[in-house]
Length: 103
Length: 309
Image 1 (tube, helix red, strand yellow):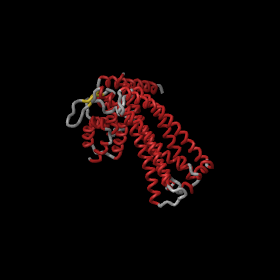
Image 2 (cartoon, helix red, strand yellow):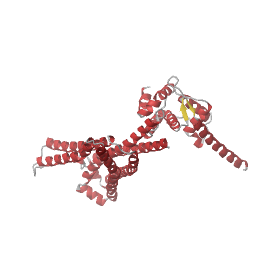
Image 3 (cartoon, each protein chain N blue to C red):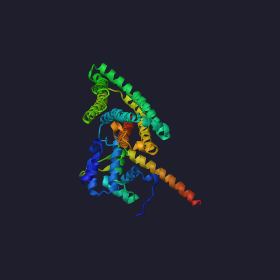
Image 4 (cartoon, chains in turn red, brown):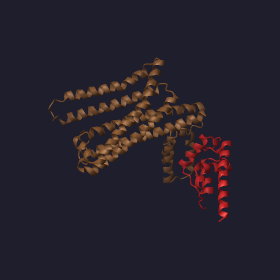
């Protein structure tokens, strides 16, 4: 799979939020999902550093532990935050595409 | 698996209570590369710098208490790091007061300039420690008087007593040396120097420990602790400046006066290079400790502000 250059959207927190937008996932599933859809490998330290931050900021929340693994899901604040970020990306992309069309 | 467990143990206790099991479960499913190991190491460092991470499972009260405790420990750790720094700074000052070093500072600009920077840094650091420490010391006294507790007041007298013991030991050692007798047996010289340095180190540890214990056992307002972070920035920057200046001093001396640098003009006639290296390493450890504590303090302060909002 080709690696996408996602710029500032390749920040681990955004990638995790995008991954959780699909469904609740535990750490390993998030890591695999991000590798599949963005071609970005998040190291375990980076992944859990970002998970801890997102949880502290109230953007994600944990679900009951299943066999030592704790799944996470987006909170309402997390959904709103991701929506805002992606809308920003959409606006930026459409503006850049319009400019490209004029060339 | 053991390596993974050791790496996870590098994380702070609070963080591990929250994430250790699931992180280990994930690592069991996934073989880790050298880069992943490095990533875990930096992740642990990041978790130490941000003590609010991993506190999600706690109640708001518990979280705030944890952050206030971090805020209280931050200036205390910086003070202890400063004490260690000053101890080796005294060794540096003692070493450089010999004529040869004074001459080198006069004839080689880089040596003289870097030495002056160490002096400027030490004054700035002392002022910063006093600016942050005096209000806390006054708060300790007020808290002890209000609660009618003698313990913290007695602890505040320890540095004065320790200094008196150190001075007494120094005078005693001088008195025991016969005037004009420069050829004491080697064991006597060794014993006398051992007692001198031992007393100095014990006095410094007892003083710093007693002050920290007094602060830890007293009621200090959160506002005062938050204020103490500001002079702590200056103290940490001054320590970094002195460290850089000491490194430049040594390198300048090696280039300008190589025979002096390679000689045995260090502390108690030891190698100059060895003494300089020892001083630089200790200063670097103390500065790193102060920088980490400062960042932890600011993280705690920001977490408290967010919790209060």
